[in-house]
Length: 478
Image (tube, rainbow, N blue to C red; front, side, top):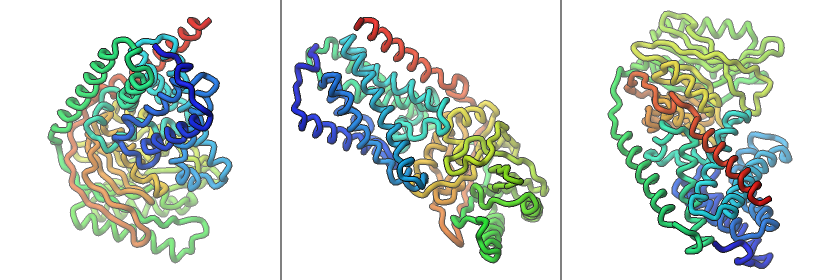
């Protein structure tokens, strides 16, 4: 097999190649990735790394991945008010990509075999699983979510989780990179082509077959409401009262139209304990009068101890659940997290409660799948630009564990997804007077998927295999 020294490039050619590779990869990452580009976008980056000597591979890879990570610039500058700090997440993404590409390069160049095409997917699947378990923001922005609009492939999540998506999607780019970088000097390329064909055809057939399943079960009428206006400490009392009255109006309208379970967004206001008690009484009375279930997102500030809550009121006028958010977004780190789950029976179905970022974590969705949830009620608050991605990430939890998701978000989507990740109803949120959505959905009985049973074992196995190959490559070098 040819070595990197066989492909000399001038400095300006390396810079141009790195810029081109970064621009191509940029189309496959970010808030609105092109799912079909994700299958091939890493190929130029890998070819450049494989053809470059080590001293050049590092900086060209970092340059390319920094360009790709800039796809998230608008989001991070909106979320993080300090520009210098907003650059750090993008740098972290670029470094992660660079380490994985350079790790794959080491394995490929040391073992020099067709099966080393598995190194890049295994490294990515392992890293993705590790980030999901260890980082405060999990594997947010995972390459697997690039396939959110490719529903047949997304069904792999019910078997292997997001790590399985990452592995299958990156394998094609890795195989193409080996073929383009080394051509016929790479032995047994037919085996590599056959492996790709089997995995891609198998994944597509499985996904298409799963999507043919008819959703059957008891029907529930869901009402979703969101008003983008935030009730803050400096909001005039008259405006605050008008917003709450508008929520009441939407709830009453949805109930009159047949709505049975009504979901409001996250953290409509942050209130004192006294105001919290008043609001609890108000919504309890409203639920009892209208004979509906109401989920309300609220923040409570008790002498500096802040909690982000989702209240669930029953048609009997009781506070049936008082769920506290587990995973906090960067702007709300002063809030206190919880570890308690909430599953309640509504009619013939079991419903779980979560808040926004909670559902970005596969472990959270799996925990509710193990508890038998048929659907999740999710108050949320997005950042406008990430609204579609956040809704689709949340829908992925439904694919992984076989439940529907009812999500009402401010500055995002009001959406309902079925157990196969199909967005069956949605509309955009809006400022006063806000938006409402009514949809009747069938909820099949809870049925644990393979992922619900086994969790992230595939991703961890990929990580162990990739780490083993890296260690062996170092030993062989010595």
